[in-house]
Amino acid sequence: MSKLRINGGRPLDGAAQISGAKNSALPIMCAALLSARPLTLGNVPHLMDVATMSKLLTQMGLGAERAANGDMILDGARIVDPVAPYELVRTMRASILVLGPLLARCGRAKVSLPGGCAIGQRPVDQHLKGLTAMGASISVEHGYIHAHADRLRGTRIVMDVVTVTGTENLMMAAALAQGKTILENAAREPEVTDLARCLIAMGARIEGAGSDVIRIEGVPELGGARHSVMPDRIETGTYLAAAAATGGRVRLTGVDCDTLDATLDKLRESGARVERGSDWVSLEMNGRPRAVSLRTAPYPAFATDMQAQFMALDTVADGTGIITETIFENRFMHALELQRLGADITIQGNTAIVKGVERLQGAAVMATDLRASASLVIAGLVAEGQTVIDRIYHLDRGYESLERKLAGLGAKIDRLP
Image 1 (tube, helix red, strand yellow):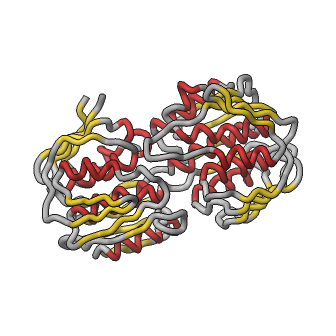
Image 2 (cartoon, one colour):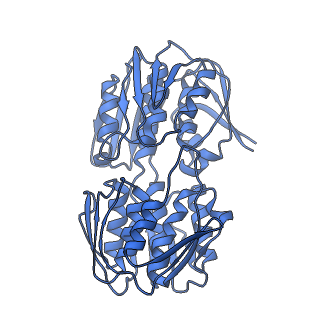
Image 3 (cartoon, helix red, strand yellow):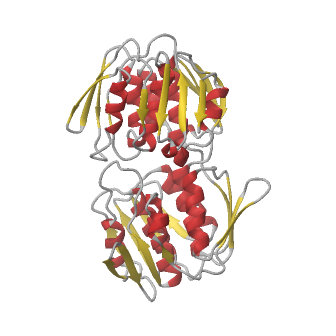
């Protein structure tokens, strides 16, 4: 199993290109199941999760290939086996996103209950509740969701909690349902809006994406389209946090600054100088950062996927930061590994109290989930000496060419077999 070796203590300095968003690419790939016509996607990142999703879709009969220019071409002309097996689903929670499209297009689906990062309970009850309200017959047997419907019917669905994948699954299912579907308490994340843009390009009738009420008028069929996946706002925030923690200076291109407001506000609060343009953002940190406190919440508030990176920033900041996690109940596992590097962190329920220290010290640590991995990389970049991060397959799920991009910013980092 590969490891990352980092020799820290060097400020990041330089420029990097941001990749397409994992959390946008995966649901959009599933949207290809809704049409018999090809869907061509640009800016799809080369990630383990993307490869897993591609494998899952191809075993159902959907064609998936990369063109010479990097585009991904998905052809759903023949779906022969609407089943998502446990072997492919267990490592990636986004696999649940095939459920709505398969049910809407094929009238049946068998999908394993999902896996993914061990960051807490992420139930799929809102997905099943919504599809049942649309007329589906659903049962859960031996770890699989069995769903059937002659044709889904539009209806009003009020979700008990804000759920990104639940909103996406139901929006895709409603695109081919009979009549109008109204999703209330819908997720407002930019990735939901990006999926809606792709579906509209395919011929769907969707209004309100990006708000908490989405209206979908079902159509008999969807066509082919071309769509470019939005930039990854979490990757962008991760590199910015790394630059701030190391006292560096970076310029990132291919970004969407309109999706970064909460992150950029906290970086400015930490003392960083942040400038932004139409498709770029730059950050410069002179001296030691100031500690920041934050509370995670659904978009447009501070993203739970940036919490671990800012905890790493706070470990070397001047002052004390109080971090409250409201989305996942088990998302502080990285705190124990940060403590191995010398961080002063106290956990009280869903709150972490981080007292900044002047320096961290390199050590061997182990990644526990995708964003925890990123926090350990940031900590390794600022720590004195050598840090070795084990179980970095988590990083490969969500960060394209991480060590290459960081090396281009001046980091001393390499991958060990």
